[in-house]
Image: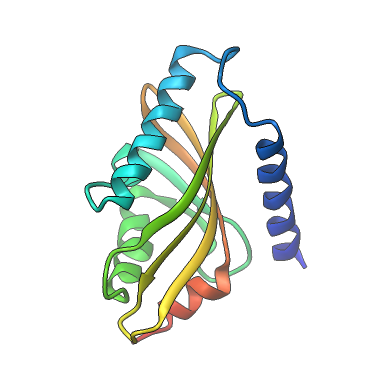
Length: 159
């Protein structure tokens, strides 16, 4: 039930952000710059020339919501070693975003996106994500990530 509430809350936040999507006339140059950094990183990720992970600070914290065994808050090294590397080992090609929307709200950059990649089994992995990025001096220091955990867990269960 808690996981359903987390997903529902993420959907409401993204839906509210979508309804309020506008340019950042009232935001600061730093916010605009952070939003532009994220948009550029997603374009590079789709083009196979980079990823938003390059925006992460060395001391960042990444929180995966929910009650999955993978849910929790990770320091950078643990996130890369325990989540990113094992996931990538189960993919036949790199994960790429297929569509995304980037929003800014009070300094928080919100990315709602779909991504996919072929798995080592030959099946196609598809998932929808909502990432909330908090920046400090041009680097992401805190991330809260919402995603379809059963799809993610199915990938992580592959041997």
